[in-house]
Length: 529
Image 1 (cartoon, rainbow, N blue to C red):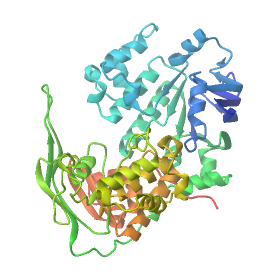
Image 2 (cartoon, rainbow, N blue to C red; image 1 turned 180 degrees about the vertical axis):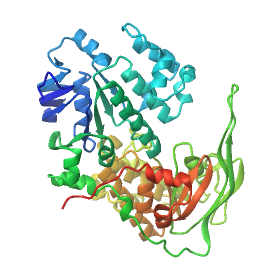
Image 3 (tube, one colour; image 1 turned 180 degrees about the horizontal axis):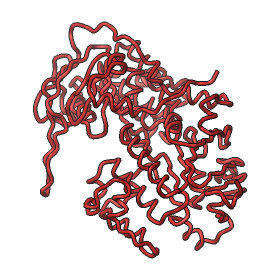
């Protein structure tokens, strides 16, 4: 296939970032080619250069990023040689992009129909916003909705409709479903593949999720440290991976067929008791209210890891926030060690804090202004006050406990100087500073790379064993739940639809919703020897 005949042709692309010490290479002589109608996967961990390539294709790189060499052709047109006006015409018409965060990609104060009209304006395009929405499986009547009134999956469909509005030959999908659960992910990629067959566009799918690529892509390339280290068709890659790093990425993803384990013996006295828990959010301005929790009940033993699994909107995060005292229930009760949690708004230093939260957002949950020492010191003093003893020793102990050693290397750093996995370890250390008996981990690995996810899950398992710590693991990833948990609760629309030992739920699901969750999980092929 010639460069002129390809939907996208990249030759020896190099991109660097200007730093105080000179140019730091981010992409090093990358070459790839995508045929019309092909779905090409670009996989690798954070920092490998995947998204930098996406920005370079559309000339969206901003200072200090600079393209230092190579060629990029979209539909035969030389992107790097084109003037600014030609590049603006190329965007949306010849190539478009779907970003990871649909909330930031859409204007929160404008209706989605108006935003689609903006894309269509000035082009010789006769379609209406309603027709674009219908194309991606959304009722045209929803064109009057604001972004916050749509689910995450529907918002991402709107962004896909925008990207396809002017019928480009290439669409770039930059981690488009990372924040979505597997069932919504399956629906969206089913929609994309159907549209690809109908419209014939090529797609570059950027992701760290190799099992997803095995499900949807035709070919893939693996990136590491700014270079492509392996390129193959999906069929060839299934037969064997040539590079050790490719095998490492595959091995870091838990497999459903390797998760079977029996639940440990449970203590007679439960640590956590949830009884008839309800949470209702009232509607406003004529909108219907929401029943986030519909009278759920369960118990959890000391030292147990219990996973709560479900799609976005199932009520699992609401459950976690009630258990930690961040919000109040509408009805029902929660007791930890036979005591109700004290609401955060009324909590005093002397009040017990048996449950602590580990948050999903490793970027937003730590104040970027303060050092790691400050974050942990504040958590220790909030628990122990002026009677904390040697706070420095306690900080060193916490950092060592979560695998950040030597501790003096991390205490003076700020969050932006740490990787995502290191930030989450700090978040876990901060939660442990209060000496909790129960850790509520709300999607603690969903924003991390696949190999880092496994490290954090292993850390949680080790902390349970060493500290006799109970962990309520909230997730939309039923595979990671099976890897970590002793038991699994499956939630759907505020109700518990199934619960049991992890092996039983994974291997013998009884409820149709659990079966659908498992069916939506992309298959992960065996790692080549």
